[in-house]
Length: 239
Image (cartoon, rainbow, N blue to C red; front, side):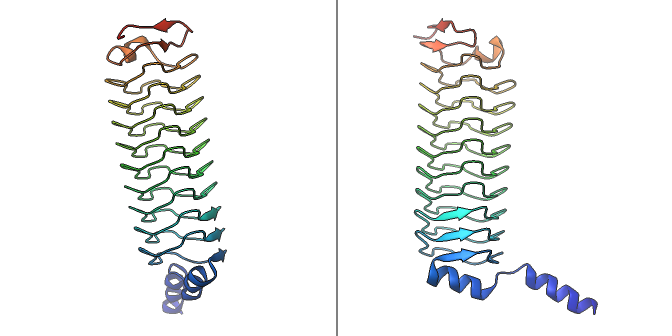
C-alpha cells in the first residue's frame, strides 16, 4: 500500500506525456502537468499556457517569442538562453528560476514572482516588471533600459553593472540592493526606497531622486550631474 502511494506521488511530480504532446501540437495547455518536462531547445513561439505547472521544467534555449503564460507555475525552471521576447508572464511564479542570458525584450512580467531568480546578463529592454517581486534576484550585467519597474520589489537584489537608463523605478523598493557600478542615467527614482542600497560608482546623472528614501553618505561615491535630489534640489557635483 505504501509503495503504491509513493508511486502515485512520484507520478504526480513528473510531466504528463499527453500534456507535453498537447503543448507541442496544439500550442495550448490549460491546467497541464509539465513538471520537470524536457522542452529544451523547442520552438514554442506563440504557445498559450494557462494555470499549468512547469516547476523544474527545462526550457533552455527554447523559442518562446510571444508566448502567453497566465498564472503559470515555473518555480526552479531552467530558461537560460531562451528567447522570451514579447512573451507574457503576468502573475506567473518564477521563483528561483534560471533565466541567465535570456532575451526578455518588451516581455510582460507584471506582478510576476521572480524572487531569487537568476537573471544574469539578461536583456530586459522595455520589459514591464511593474509590481514584480525581484527580492534577492541576480540581475548583474543585465540590460533594463526603458524597463518599467514601478512598485517592483528589488530588496536585496544584485544589480552590479546593470543598465537602467531611462527606466521607470517610481516607488520601487531597493532596500539593501547592490547597484554598484550600475547605469541609472535619466532613470526615474521618484519615491523609491534606497535605504541601505550600495550606490558606489553608480551613474545617477540626470536621474530623478525626488522623494526617494536614502542618506547623503550613500551618494558620496555616486556620479551626480543634473541629478534631482530627494529634497527637490539639483546636484551638479560631477558635471
